[in-house]
Amino acid sequence: MLLNFTKMEGTGNDFVVVDARTQPVTLDAQQIRILSDRRTGIGFDQLLLIEAASLPAHHCAYRIFNADGQSVQQCGNGARALAAYVGAALPPANPIHMESPAGVVHAEVLPGDLVRVNMGVPEFDPAALPFSAPVQATEYVLDTESQCVEFGAVSLGNPHAVIPVTDVDQAPVETVGALLQKHPAFPESVNVGFAQVLNPGALRLRVYERGVGETLACGTGACAAAAVCQMLGQVGKEVRILMRGGELLVSWAGDGQTIWLTGPCNRVFEGQIEL
Image (cartoon, rainbow, N blue to C red):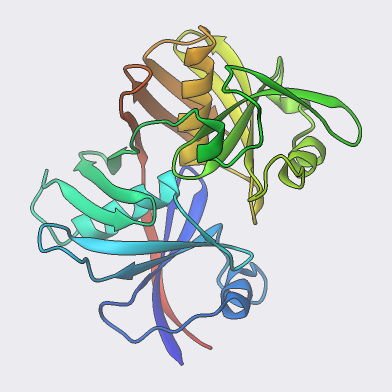
């Protein structure tokens, strides 16, 4: 099978976009893992599969697969990449409506290669992640194999644990991230963010993602960090999220409101690969 694809990136988070509206596509988990290999394949954090929308008012539907071949419900930077891909064929400033596994995503392509997406309402109910906790709380503590970890938890269509740290450069991202991901309290695993608040309008962030490991950026992780830190009273309604791959802006009016993610997105190259 000859597969046409587009490589895209947003703040270092990289994606392969496959448009199933223009070609027959049948991919299994093993093939996705092969494609994700950065030495023998294309290389990506997530593969984004575009399909036809179910409603005329929507521009497309999409599914998301991590580098390990497993499907996930949502990806913030992936949604921005898809909006940029779809928006290239639309008039400027045209609102874009996309069907995702987590619901309809509304997006806008802005000047300067910026894309803004509505990531929905952050859900703090532990059952939404899912996360096994007796009651909903602002902060939780779990005993892992090596230490107790204190964190906030929220769903952005996918599960996130956000750990406050004093210095992200010294944070035990891989060890603690892996421990939380395999903890039985998270039956579907979890994305683990390490957030260092700089001031009420900015924080630094590193994210250890499910099925990928640490990435240069994570859009839903940025939203999760901003939401958890706002609930803790540490940041305001607009927060610059500084990650190793670049900067994102998260805007959130507060509990029960939708959260917006804005940042750059670029088309890197197009190609074909034989499977």
